[in-house]
Image (tube, rainbow, N blue to C red; front, side):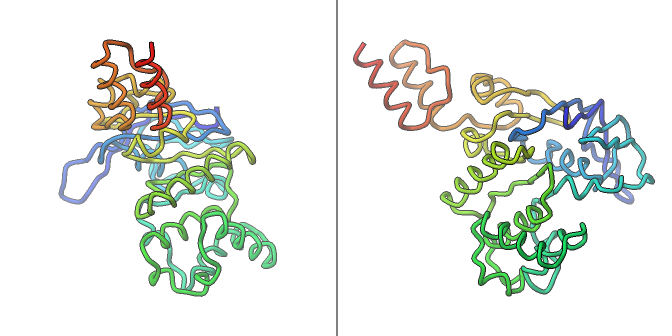
Length: 285
């Protein structure tokens, strides 16, 4: 397993307030070279899970294994050398991640600090910007003068430029238009097929990631309540309801049509075209 959480618990502690549950005895095992969607309602523990993976926060209890690193509980422990080079984390809010004078300097920061030569780093930056669809002319601008969608792309590119083995992305498609969302998700999934990278993608929208992720993990109240395929998840209505999620619109429509026709809905989560073909076939029977 490339990632393993063994009974991991964590609580946020704010001065003068009671501890707030983040993770509660969470157990999870994930294989490498896959795109995994981590789903759940706001406050379920999705972001907390990702932040544990590169040592940004450390567990109170349990053991985390990431690649060949062991992350043991205890807030005073140092982050293992090399972990953050191999596990790239894209924050939910990109303005928390971008800090340099220009977009180009932000994208150069990772590869230069991880030992690339200036020429190698510059080439890596160009590839990362092109990968996310960030216009080269924007590299000279301040990241804080970009649109929200451009800033989101810059944050993803900054992590990609460091060439990590694992990409952990927190709502990476927020602020993007529908076409850009689909394009980025397809490209991220392509990294698992062409480069063997492991991609974890946090979302609260099942419909958006259903066609791209190889595996789905649903979190509620800091615990994993489901792990499996899209086919398995969309037919687990009780899991979706408990986690505050909605099935894709095509699946909901398939259920309504199947009920009207008195037949079983299609097994696989259909897209619009597949749903139309299935419905036409049922009418012809």
